[in-house]
Length: 355
Ligand SMILES: Cc1cc2nc3c(=O)[nH]c(=O)nc-3n(C[C@H](O)[C@H](O)[C@H](O)COP(=O)(O)OP(=O)(O)OC[C@H]3O[C@@H](n4cnc5c(N)ncnc54)[C@H](O)[C@@H]3O)c2cc1C
Image 1 (cartoon, helix red, strand yellow):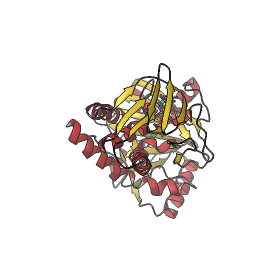
Image 2: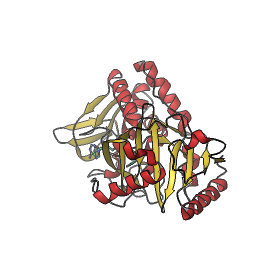
Image 3: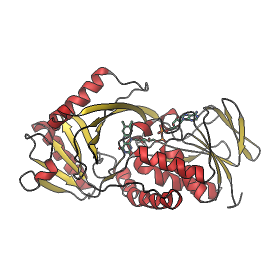
Image 4: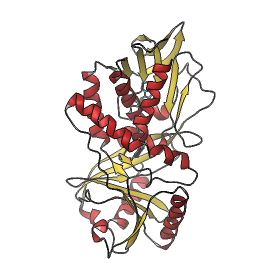
């Protein structure tokens, strides 16, 4: 197959599928996306942090190195989207402030610092006395923290809205159907969905934590769902300040504040595959939030969202050409799928133009 215009089918319209569709359509390929409910999977629950430094975790140096490339890649997607739609993707670079609630949480923060240092991540110790604005809304018990510069956030709802509008302008067809089976016929890939059989030159599976549809199998990769919830509240505007991350009684809490007082509080993490929010999980998340940011007491709860993060055994993302001819699988983005979507999209382009 040459580099000419290709017909590509994408199964799954979360942030990975939609960003890949955009990148392929911009490069003049004919793209069709199948998803019964686009962007209502993990993408819907995500807070939208692009936080390579704030998300540092032991053993995840490869993810850190990859994520450092995400912000420029998102800025490029933003420019391309603006050329088409006239609208900007707001990408806000505030950095991340990490704090610990009690003494053992502060020890956990010190362990985070050790790991971050071993990754050579830039960081600055900050004190409330010197920079009171960073601690706006934060409990008076917390007077110091670590600032990780360069981290940013965007609003996945806005990104999805703009991507869908750009895809429409580019003539990308979104079929609101679940794909039950994939296979290959001679030189074509085939999708069997609820109501049709669809043929294309190449196929990409981007189904997040759902894994491969029937007919597809992998020799190297697998995903498991890791459930997570965010709570959306209205009432505290920390949008000019760094996104907040806290260790609270051994758990993790974060708050991303958007202009106007809309805040995303997150996030729970359970090895569960049912996309339901349990009372205890919600209670723990809100309780941790109130410990760290007591001013949330009077914020109004707008909405809770739940999603299943696609985790690979190594916790690293993958882009795999399947043995099934003409098919590739892009998944395993775990806690970082919003961050990594433009890079996954470049892998999709390489796959299509190199096949
Ligand atoms: C609570 C929470 C907070 C998060 N916060 C962040 C964050 O701040 N920053 C960050 O970078 N990442 C974050 N993430 C991770 C991020 O949301 C995921 O890594 C990312 O959404 C994965 O994208 P995806 O497109 O692979 O999967 P999804 O968003 O789950 O999309 C998969 C899509 O495939 C569709 N699908 C599945 N099976 C089929 C089928 N057979 N046929 C057709 N369609 C199908 C689904 O309907 C869905 O729309 C968060 C996740 C959670 C749960």
